Length: 185
Image (cartoon, rainbow, N blue to C red; front, side, top):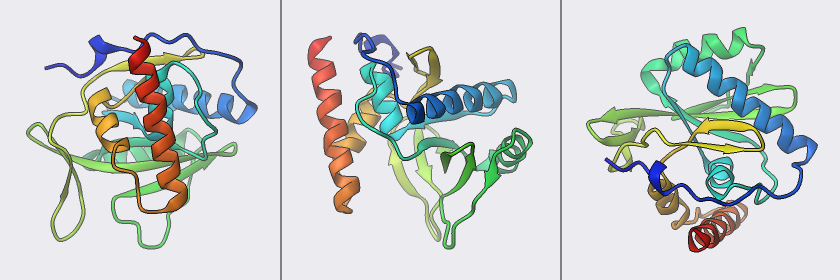
């Protein structure tokens, strides 16, 4: 199965990341390494996944989005708390939760594997996020290596902008960045 790793976008990083971006990249590296050492599956998605696929920081980011298996929720929680992350649950959480450390917001989204499909654990019935696995692609940016969702899954997600005007604008910007990067390969 092709998870996008063979179609990695070869775009050299440009410029130095901001202080905020450096802190988020450090968090991506540290959390990813901690989860890997614990044998816990995870996938970076959202804006930072776009940046890793593009090979450059394309915009400022408010948070770091990470998908983890719902079955691993207790283990992930224990690991993050042990590493100094403060749990900041929000009222009405359904498929995810948040953690914060040193000014970095980490947003977790819980997923369920159903064969090749990836589901979001909504009640009373899960919703399909992807008809195929997120894969095992790794990308690097400014010295940070991370496991990211497959490029085709990310492109499909960004091709359907969210309804919120600000989030929709980020999705359109992310899609444009990915499309420019894929044309350059």
